[in-house]
Length: 405
Ligand code: NAD
Image 1 (cartoon, protein in one colour):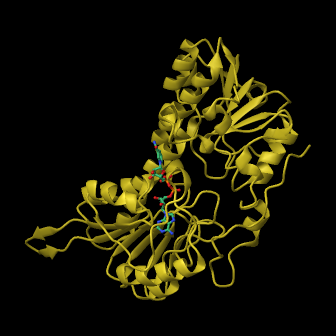
Image 2 (cartoon, rainbow, N blue to C red; image 1 turned 90 degrees about the vertical axis):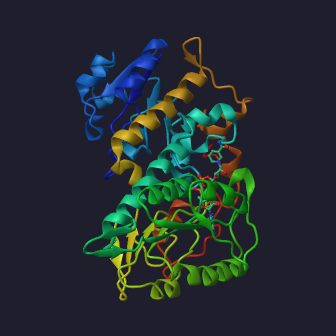
Image 3 (cartoon, rainbow, N blue to C red; image 1 turned 120 degrees about the vertical axis):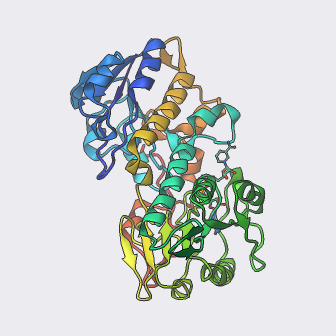
């Protein structure tokens, strides 16, 4: 069986699905590995380094003819058009927020396995958890971006030229990215507070050095699978208002809040922004075309408010550390691949919880139960942009189209 790695086509994407070390492991397991020429260039892996690891460096057309095509992100239309029924594609396909892509893959007759659908709480899935590996990188890089933008020190500094007080950093959302952000900001010497709507994260946040903030106006909002549930309108308003008081007392706010398959919740309102001191910094890791965790954030841009608050719309953070991100992702995707292979061939057992969890399309149909639920964000919604208030509701948008067949 041949697996291949193609060069990512998304603008600004620097990661690659396999690094040479992972190629060696797959070769040792008896797989043929094809790598599109230049696929690893932007993560500093040359064609020669793949050849040395016993991969065959090929054209894109040849790579796209492999039995299994490995990617980091989503395939573009030309990539899907070049594939044939019966092939398998594995990548971060974001089916909950891009159902149209899943429909295209099903229509092409390929089997699509999405790395972001791995059931993360299954112990055997831990080595495959690409959401966690990439969120770790994003949380780390978000703090570095904040420290670079911030006009003062993060640590307490006592020098002959005066004393600098430590920066006060607030991390909103203490999942994987938030916990890494807390740890990184602490290592830089900042005083760190944190908040999450899932109260069970308190001990985790405290264990990496944050003071946990508990809101009195919003109760626990733990949802399914260890994630948060979407808040009601009343809860959202109460949360924003109470958070605003805390936000105004911080120099740097890093927001990481997500609810799977939904728009990111707005945590830093216009009023909260106005209450912050000039020179304060927000890093919004939820920044998206639909709006992010902070009012007015723009993905990929730094916006300066009238009162001098910089809002960094942090998108593509894992890609900005492409070598580390690719190494981790390669381990995740290789672990999944090796798990799915029996006697040198892909053996997709849909009675297996892990396999069924990642499979979104096969045999011309969309097959994942979550994709037939009526509460996903559609691609058409993402093109409408934020509401006039600058932030749409975080609620559901429209039903995912069913199987194209
Ligand atoms: P995520 O990226 O979906 O969300 C980030 C954080 O935002 C979460 O902690 C969530 O509670 C928080 N959040 C959402 N809405 C919020 C709001 N309105 N206000 C404040 N905070 C809000 O989550 P993630 O980091 O990918 O993972 C979340 C959790 O999933 C983990 O903390 C863990 O419990 C679980 N998980 C488990 C495993 C495992 O069992 N091995 C692996 C990975 C993740």
